[in-house]
Length: 334
Image (tube, rainbow, N blue to C red):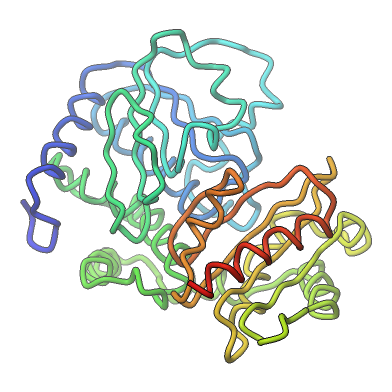
């Protein structure tokens, strides 16, 4: 085991099983979760990089498009949006990355052959081990951290291409190395990647500082309806589909908006309620640690982490707000 890597036997065994799964096949389908974020796209690309190093072929596919801001990642243009692919070929060797549960894969699961082998690589504590082979580390800051361990386990030297993707996943899932998940191991990995020549400061500026005009206009609208509970421990922002249309924003422009509710002094749980085009409401929850928002999200069919989670509710906006706030209030009382 490499210095800094978790040394508990079960993890080493999982790494070995995951690598055996990759070596045991020739052609793979790599998938991540719907509406992919930095870690999901980076994990997809790092997995593809590792398969290529092992002499394997692959197809990368997602139900959603790659966020524009991640277009700098080498190979990202080859991640297929299944809605734009006419070929409905089935795959019998699947690798799912950063999917907390099977349903997060979305409609891409329709491309899985019956009885397929499925390697599930993930860091969410709510992961239900849906794979035929599972590589899960709930204490990892991001799925790319686990993939970095897998690459080390395989004895393959990292290069700038894969290093940039790993750094991107770590940077986005730790909020710029600010969240409690930023462990010594995370910083060790980041340091090793910077040594390769990856420009961490440029990635941070692009991913964490830059903002589109549409995003700024959406922020303006969102902050105008920022609401607090009577005790000021809960804050939430609502964004209607009409707000997206009026500003020309996309769902990608919503990223980070929930933090404006959570970061207010005295607020323990911040939330963002987003109305989708189909009328459902998607909820993002962020916690100071006073409440386990993963457990709250699970009661509504969602999941995530103790401090960051999400769910989808098929109901009107105000009903969704009322139900989730009630659940959060009860959790804070406990």
